[in-house]
Length: 376
Image (tube, rainbow, N blue to C red; front, side, top):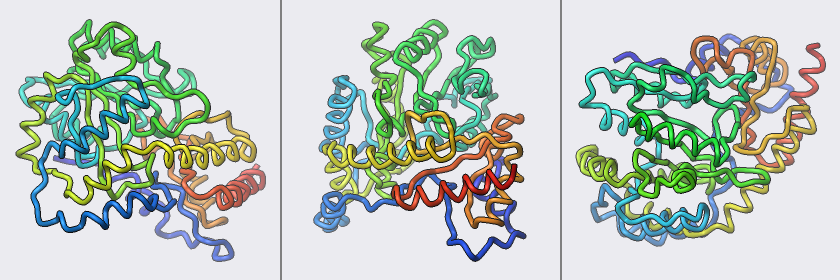
């Protein structure tokens, strides 16, 4: 198998011969890793349960974690899930890589569709699954939303959506998601929405694909799955706590598969995870901080108002040149859009992750604005 280097590896190679301006502090805005402390109550739950390291964890997650995650889904989306409709997982990255392999294993000529630009694990999963890829190109012309009318989509066995979207920040409405559900049912396609940014929003709450499934009458979630995670909402990527939820028929077989994968969450992490999933107050505090950062980006960089995630998808003349010169002149690292896309999609954009506190973010954005002004 041949995998593309990760975007961050490409960035290191791009910048390796550039000496940044030492008059400015080094700033990295490339990775979607919150730079806030994990809330104290989550850390305390981890410490208090360290003694559980002596026990083997279940691959499907302990009941208290599954209950906490289903409670979150009920409180946040108004969707009541049965125990058989959710599996606790060791972070969503492992699922995004191994679930397609499980689902597509017995397909003669599997076809997988996902947005372009994209989180690179989608591509890795397609390669590992021997799947032909249909790219759902997200461009300014289509509002950075996937085109459901693409003819090749009808041949897909698995479609991955990502709303709210990384890196473009676009959000599919409940009605739009409902159309995707109807499409998946009509052509018997498994539809999965990666919802890891669902809790980072400004104003209207992003809808879940589970809500959309109920909205169009698919109350058994046939062919419908979602993923979610603590990483962004709780500033806790190191907990590796996520879930996959939806069609219990698909999840039953996948749960059995996962007992062989061996990706089980250590019990102290499960205890801390349950505490995080059960609490919504700390999420509101984080959301407010990111909302402030997005507002600053709108005010300082003049980008359109951003309604979800913590990214800026900034249009530039040349993404490679912009990245290199910004690093050289201001010691700020951003990610060229072409490293996140294929076939030219993403070129002339850079992704900026606003994961610092608002004071630092404001200073950084002003430096970027000054850089842009001086470059004109």
